[in-house]
Each structure stands twice: as C-alpha cells, then as structure tokens.
Length: 152
Length: 111
Image (cartoon, rainbow over all chains, first blue to last red; front, side):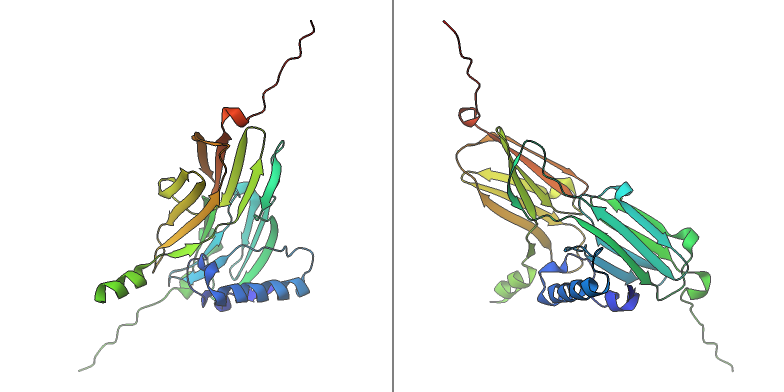
C-alpha cells in the first residue's frame, strides 16, 4: 500500500499524539483500510509514524519500543521509502501472565516521497525505541533563495 | 484568575503506556513501552499499596508530555527489593517479594 507522504505530514509532529481522538480515529481508519488491502501482514497494532519536511530534508520518526537495529529494515530510492519492522512479544519463562497490553507487530510500509532525495545521504538511527530517518533532498529539490534585483 | 489559566495551558498531556505484568515465585515483573526517554527522566515510585511509573518526554514541541501509570500492589512486595532497567525504549521493573512470601523449600527428613 502506498501512502502519500503529504497525507501523513499534515498531522502533528511527534507521534506521541495517541491520546487525541482525531489521531486515534485516524489510526483506526488506517488499520481498517490496511486490513482490507493487505490482510495478513498488517498486524493489530501499528507503530506511530510522523513525517516532517525541514526544507533541506525529509524526516521520519517512528516509535518502535523494544526493537534493536536488527529488527528494522529500511530501503530508499530517490522517491520512495520502505520501512519494515517486526516485534515479537513473549512472556518470560517461569512467569505467570497477569496482563498483556503490549502487542507484537509485523509492519511493512512504503511511502512515496514528495521530493526527490539523495539516497546516498540518507541516515537512520534507532535510539531507545525511536527510529529517526533523515533523507536529505537531492540538489535540485533543495529550497533556493531567489534574490530580486532592482534595475535602475 | 490569570495564574489559573496559565496553569491549565501548561498542564502536561498524560500518556498511558501499555504494560505487561508477569509474576514468578520471587517477583512481579512490569514491562512498559515508553520509547524515547532519557533514563534520568524515569521515576519508579513504590509507596505501598501503590506503585507508580512516571516519565517525562523531552523535546515535545508544545505541551510537556508525561507517561504515567499507577498500580495497586499488595503487601507481598518488598519496597527494598525493587529494581528497574531501561533498554530500547522498554522499561522493566522487578518488584521483589518479601522473604515471607517467597516459597521456601523444606527438606523432608527421614528419622
């Protein structure tokens, strides 16, 4: 499923907005439509992902608690991004289960990018369960300042 | 009046982290998804019969954001035997049981 980058970036920065009714409704819808389009691989819980355009680069922030580098797979081209992440949640051995709210997921999402990027300069980091991607725009997509000259 | 409305807009937005709770013979284990925190901003408070997790999210653009969750635990927990660790955005709190509530193996002697 391709999701237009712009559709997502309209929502507030920092994915922690899960308490807002609008965003939870949107997630419900995402989940619902996701289920219809690609039933098996769209698990019940999807990580919260937010995009931003800083002018010089496109950035992505995803909350992936419990994951380390090896659980995340990212590939980029000049105009598309694919993020794969999988989380397995298992009860520790020798323990009885009282409550289970944390869900495992298997998440694969492709995004069409609104600007051409330079794939060679793309950077990703995963720190305390937060994935941050920085995709610097290609030279031709960088914002340019046009100076207005006055002719006497 | 002025002060009051200021307080209101400053009030932190509270998030409820998802948790798993497990129990073994010697402890309760609480596992919470709280990504992106500085370990110094995480507070684990044991004030029987309450046990509370509180953590501040740094760098949120507008309102401060905090993760908070309170649990009721019983007298089996020994507040001196509580340990917490934070890795990959997941907080694990081990709440050790008091010696009196941990099973003790009794040897059967033949006379």
